Length: 162
Image: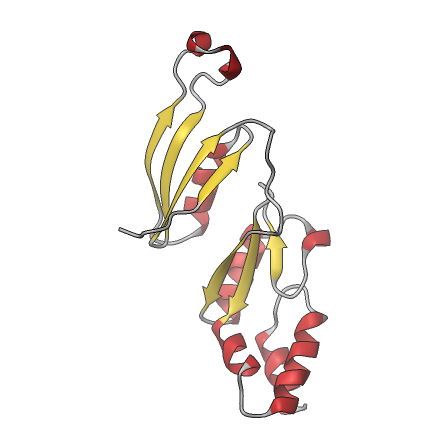
């Protein structure tokens, strides 16, 4: 069991988000959903009957919890989830599935239809940004800063000075 579990606050679409995320990530599942009871027990929960009070789901081995809490809090870029991608094909897959707000794209960051920010990063990126050639690292960084979705071949070319 992991020690720290991210908790996501959704307006009123937590179940839709859980279903969406488990369709995107391999080895994923919804573990449980507890629902708000009949709202007559508390006036603050009007309209919440059967919404997600506590959802628990796993995305490729990472556990999350979530709830429908209403419109009081929104996701922003201060918190994002990084996806370690094996290669360009995996970058392309996740980018196509998760990027829904083109004006939020920058340096491998995208925002999904629920407003969650994701960093879709090829594993090769770490090698290029910590390489032995300081000028290659600088060129890679400058190339990355101009990209929306990261392009492994273009980043490698920048590192090599091509």
